[in-house]
Amino acid sequence: WLLETEATHVITLNVKCRIVWLKNTMLKSVITNRTKTEAKEWFDKYIPYVSQKSDETPIPVQREEVAAETNQVISVLFSIAKFARFLFRLCRESPVFALLLLLAIFTYHLKQRIVLLEKLVDEVQMNM
Image 1 (cartoon, rainbow, N blue to C red):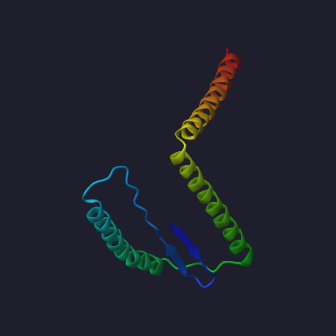
Image 2 (cartoon, rainbow, N blue to C red):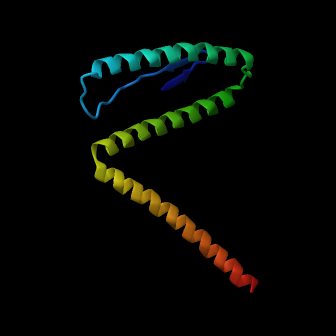
Image 3 (tube, one colour):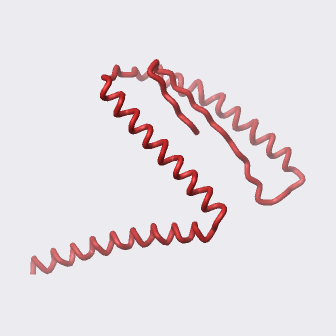
C-alpha cells in the first residue's frame, strides 16, 4: 500500500498485490485469477467508502509549518515502511537472520523487564 497526498487535498492510494506460492497445484491459475478478481472487487467497494468518509470529515486548513511537519512525519513513516519491507524480505530469504532478529527483540524486552524489576526492588528496599 502506498498512500500519497498532495497540497490540493488529493489522496492517491496505490495497492500492489503479490501472490506467493509455497507449493504447486493444478488449480494454481484458477486460484490466482480468482484471488486477483476478489481483491479488485474489494478495492472497488473500498474506494467509494473512503470517498464517502473523506467527504463527511472536513479537511482543516493547515498553516505552512504544520503542513511541513506533517510532510516530515509522512516521510519518516514511509522510510520506516521501506525499512520494514527490506527486513521482511531479508527474513524470508534468510531464516537465520529472522531468528537472530527475533532473539534481539526478545532480549531487548527481557532487558526492559529486568530494569523495571530492579526499580521495583529498589523501591521496596527504600520503603522497608
